[in-house]
Each structure stands twice: as C-alpha cells, then as structure tokens.
Length: 391
Ligand SMILES: *Cc1c(COP(=O)(O)O)cnc(C)c1O
Image (cartoon, rainbow, N blue to C red):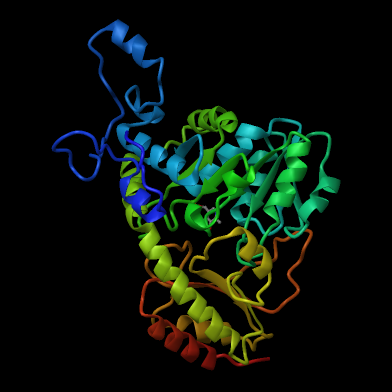
C-alpha cells in the first residue's frame, strides 16, 4: 500500500488505502470476500502466521479490503494503526475490554453515547469492570475522580445529544501524569475536524456507520491508536470475533473518498440552520458548538477545525401532543436513529439516564442536517415550530 504524499486532507482522502504504483490497477481496490485463504505448503501456511493481520490468513483476521481501510484510517487519523470492527459499539467495547480488566475502573462522561450505559450494566459489570460517570465539563478536576484501580478515562466530545465540549488536553495531561489510558469517541467531528491522537489520546473510536460510510447503509466501527495501544485493541476485536464485514469495509473506504466534500456541505448548512434557529423566539437554546455564543464554543474554537451536521435545540415546556404534531409533520426531516448520511433526520433526545449532571432544561430535539438545499430544511423547521403549542 503506498502512502499518500499530499499535504491536503481532501487529496489524501482520494489516495489512502489504494495501490497507486502498478500499471493497469483499478481505481478502487477490489472487494475481497473471504473466510478462507489457501496455501500451497505447510511452510507457506506457517509463514502466513508470522503476519496474521495482513489480510491473507483467515477472514476474521482481515482481508486485503479491511487492511486497506485500516491503513487509510490510520493515515488520516495520524495513528500508528487502526482496527476495523463490526459497528461503532463493537469498537467502543473493544476499547474497554482492551484497557480495563476485572476489578478495574474506567471513567466515562455523563454525556456519553447512551448505549455505553447499557453495555455497562449488561456486560461490563458482569466482567467485573466498573464504570463511573463524570461531568463532561470537569476538565483537570478529573484528577479527583481517579481511583487506584482506574485504568481508562473515556471521552466523547461533543457529548451525545447535549454537545458538551470537553477539555481534552487538560484531561489527557492528568491521565498521562498517572499512566492512565485515554480513549475518545470522535464520531461527530471525524478525523477531519478533530485530531485527538495529536493531543495525546491513546485510542480514537469512530462510528464509521455515520459520516465515514455516509449513506446510511452499513454498520461499521474503527479504532485508530498509538503504537502502544494497538495490539490490545487488535486482540480485543479478534477475541470478541467482532471483525467488520468486507462489504461494509468497502463502503467505508468508498465513503472516505467524498468525506471532505460532504462535511463541507454538512457544516455550511448546519451553521446556517443553527443561526436561524437561534433567532426563533420559541427556541431557548441551540446546542451546536460552532455557533458563536453556544455552550462550548470557545473550547471548540481552540481545539477543532470544523463542525459536522448534528446539533440539538431546546424548547420550552410543551403542551401534550405538541412534539408529535411538530415532528410527525416534517417533510424533509425524517424520524430515525443514526446520522451522518446524506439525509436530514430529527429525534427527541433522551437525557433521563444521566447520573451526575441531570438535564434540567426543556425538551431537546436533535437534528441532523443532511445534504439537501438548506432553504428547504429551514422552511420545514419553520413550519414544524409553527405546529408547536406551549404548555
Ligand atoms: C451511533 C454512534 C455510536 C455507535 O455506532 P454504531 O455503528 O451505531 O454501533 C457510537 N458513538 C456515537 C457518538 C454514535 O453516534
């Protein structure tokens, strides 16, 4: 696999994970569908065991397609390596299993992607792994929450649904001083707009299901790591058998080619929608860190180079049935989980599972700004807000 020599990320996205050296190669690497690779001799089989993850030993260890995707992600994230997994959640669980063992402890922000809480109570607890939740805005105050058995500080910035921007450098500094690993969910910003490995984070999780695949048609996760964190994460994905499917990996690779172009559009439309929403009398607050004056804007400006298309906004207390009237009547924003595809989505945010920083504001709606004409989206939102009746 040749590495891209380009400096610009849009150029690199068109080149990573491809073999550009030989004559007459197809533009896109072929999709290798394989469980089984065959060998002419026992010696050749033994030889293949020396590099089990080069995509030519057994399908669960990798295929040339997954190897290409992992190389591409490692290069774009600036990591030593990357490990593909069958979903974003599989990637997150691999990080916990890789770094935290029985009788050990991890710190998790209260704004974490909610499914992590479910994995906590259903699986991690049974494995003897203890999670405790912290205020995402704690900054260097994280030091006081560290226990003798704390092995991992997990981060997610901005937080799911509520968009708190964490002081990542401050938390990493505390963790490093104590030899504790850090991992972050970077799905919102993608490696294009936030570069946690450069700030000293050990492992970066992307739910590639979202912007990397970009078309709402595949489940895929990936973890990019430092050299030191790489083998534990690789082993965890292997041991859980949560390897990514080759068709999905190929869709991730395809998505990378247009990631920059798509994010430019998501960002431009999202900032326009955020501005418009913040001028609506019925909207109490817009939670979009790229919006001047929004919570977290200063930290976002310091650490991020862009913003994607996902935000929330807060409404005042509503009359019964008001949310139903607004949300069910939308023309372009469809109700659905996930985000990061080309289409706009809307969803009420559930904050009732928060433990240490309860949400005390009004009802929250999360919207994903897709690639449609922004004028259509604003018109749709305007009509929707007009259907609301306050309590
Ligand atoms: C969707 C999502 C995930 C989980 O990804 P899946 O591929 O759906 O398992 C993790 N983190 C964040 C922030 C997400 O939005």
